Length: 168
Image 1 (cartoon, rainbow, N blue to C red):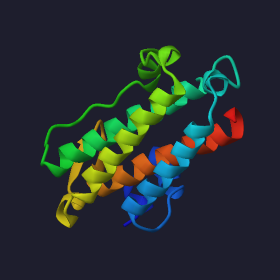
Image 2: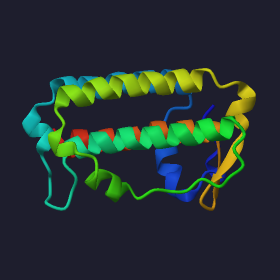
Image 3: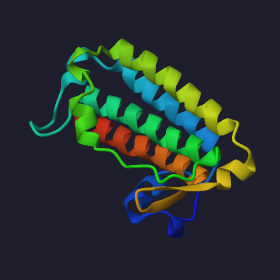
């Protein structure tokens, strides 16, 4: 179930707002297909494109989506397993700089993304209702496992909109 915005840190509310009030698993599957279709049609020139010199290439955006999916899924797994330690945040720009994006092909991104999203779906599909309600902390913020799933989903929605409007 889509989380109540009042319990979500303000920074993430836009991501939650971009999701539907329906099954997380169904939405993860639908958005998987949406990004797969984009990647299947993307040329290497489009993947290398930057709409401004200080912006990430489309290839870097796709890798950023995957990095964040892994991080949000790890956080969800940690909390579902009862982790009590405060998890740390990460520097997305350093991740992009060190992503080796320039040496990645579109087919390699597509293959990796398909496997990653299937793994994410499997992970969330197998959390119990009780586990989805479990909470933990990242930096100073508290999140439930369910909320992290919707943030993961909304984060991709946000970047897919940017890919469609500025890169393709």
